[in-house]
Image (cartoon, rainbow, N blue to C red; front, side):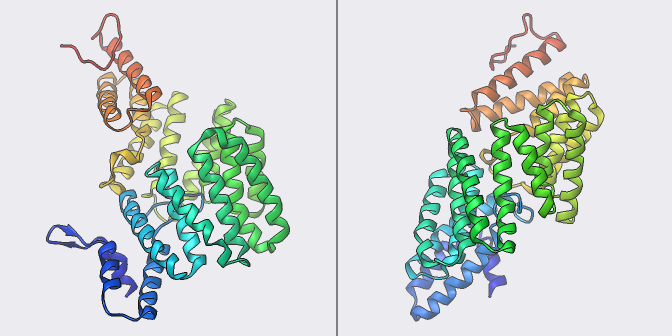
Length: 372
């Protein structure tokens, strides 16, 4: 039953995708006892719970593309609404809503829906007064979501997470706390990096390693600290470590998390003038990304990889190829990321400098209007 339901949303019938929404509507309509309907909803929730990974340090989208996960998140929202009315498995519901809202927040796709999911999870907390780990997960999720929505909340998020850490350490068993701590420390470390509190971020990384085995996410994030401190060799060392750990954890080098690390490694190597290796990693990153996300809606991904590759090609003296990448990027950004004026301006500057190198403009000033 579960194997059938897992693929139900993606079955193509005469060119149309069958939706779990429609399946739910039909189940509610047919003559079934409430107990049978509840059992059916429980099965669906099990599928969704297993198939929607949180985009956090412990999880990554490996088997599904982001657009597939996005579809599943929409299904989760519908099924959770029905399950909440029937109070079906509140603990699983809360965790499912947390993961789904986290996806919406991190991909900046329908943030309002993600916020509403967290509110619904919060209303279920009274059903599980003794499930402290789930309650703390809910509280962490709310702090994280507020920080994702507004950078003005970053300092408050640090204070709130630190307070939660102290409280959870007193109330949870050692095993429960160590599991929760993995998520808490990751969020705290990332916030300190965003706030440029590099020494604090480094302390958290070292504290994490005392009780946990890094799967690559922590090493990736902390590499930024050493980059900002201008210790570029250490930053690259950490990214190489992150890449090794991620490949081992996912048992394949073809995964999105390794692609992200390769992209950053390529960028750092390019800055140091190690152009050949930089281009090697950036091209692999793009190939992995395009393979796994072949059906990805462009709006879900900010094209930093292409920007890094264009800059590396420019440093290598391949100005025509760099120009082609920058111009394609500018067109994409105008369509999908028009609000990101800082990134748009950086592309314009990159295009201008390639034109200068190719002797195409005097003076070299490109404003997005191509001249014959």
